[in-house]
Length: 132
Image (cartoon, rainbow, N blue to C red; front, side, top):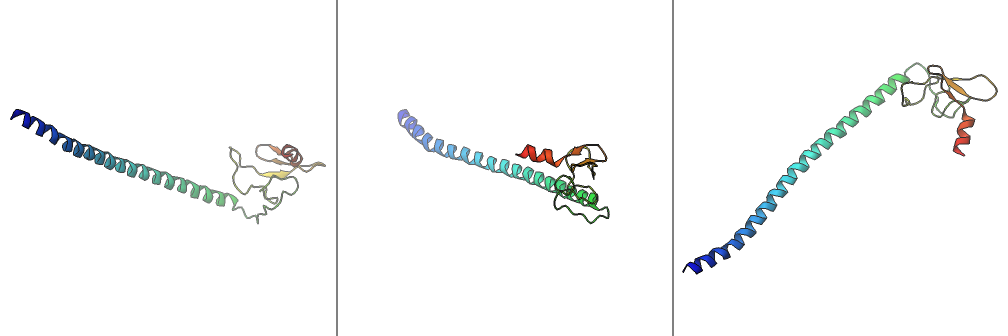
């Protein structure tokens, strides 16, 4: 009689083990969904922060260019770098670095320009040689 109870209890452990296995897998899946939701929330926050910074940069750039000049960024005239207004010397977007260059045409035979704030110079003929 003891053997029968023993074998019956052993046979009932198999379905109990299978059910326990599926419950553990279900728990892992639910925890993974919660983790994914929190990661998606953090990602949404990062995207919103990036959009806010991008919008602030656009607004700052618009204020920077609001100096009364009717900007013309087409073509590099008189040795100005690309995307620089040849009337006021400002670039269409603020360059990286500490100086917001204001380019002025340099004197001499070869077309070149220099920043009136930091003194950096731009020579389009050197640029063409570097690209070739």
